[in-house]
Length: 161
Length: 156
Image (cartoon, rainbow over all chains, first blue to last red; front, side, top):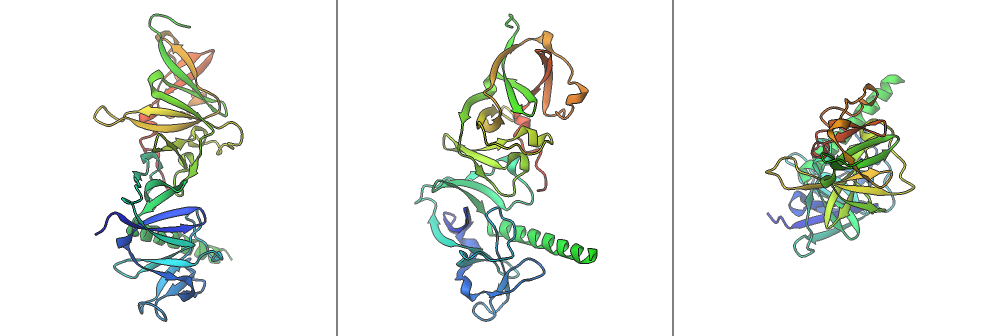
């Protein structure tokens, strides 16, 4: 375990810090098989170019809502480790951060802002912006939560027709 | 008004006709036009933070908490920095309150105590410690420790 090493995923104005140990790999978006899915993922990775399994890849907006259309600036994705199947999350830029070297002090998300559906556990002021810290586990849980909501909304829309 | 038994307090104006008071020692600073940062997935009444003396503080919007629509903050940006302690064994905490005007220092005594009127019951009881009459208006005294405790946290 290297608790001081983080991967910084940047998309739009969002700075998302994820522990390096929770990330399997960072890949380029060209290797994603892009397709719409009924659960909100924007494509798959793995069988052709990667680890031999089909990992779903998600795209999020800066407010952490699901995006179904991939913005042009998305260049990379990080594969989050999971006991079942790695899950991908897209970003515009990616950087390795040693928080000791960068003198970053993470602060717990204030109690009044905590929310069971939020993946954010801590905050940090970095490069004149507010960064959000998530663990791989909380991010995967959050993506599952978004995905379930999307699937439910789609089903209900189909039933209404 | 100032009598022997009077206590000092801050009268806070949150806008939309919402006013409350806190103890004089419970408001440490007032910031004008601070930089706000939106935090995703946070409750609508507390979706922003600011950086104050190297600490990241939540900023509460009382009208949104009490059920009004989110206020548009395109005029004067005033934030009161509240000080609270959940219990004596805990360190002091700080949190921001969006205000519509600068806090007003006032004196309050026991003779001004009153019940919270029915039409102000949107101020729910764990949040309101007591109430007093000020210039003919009932002003609740609010518990900042309760306010910033996270007991309002809910699903987005």
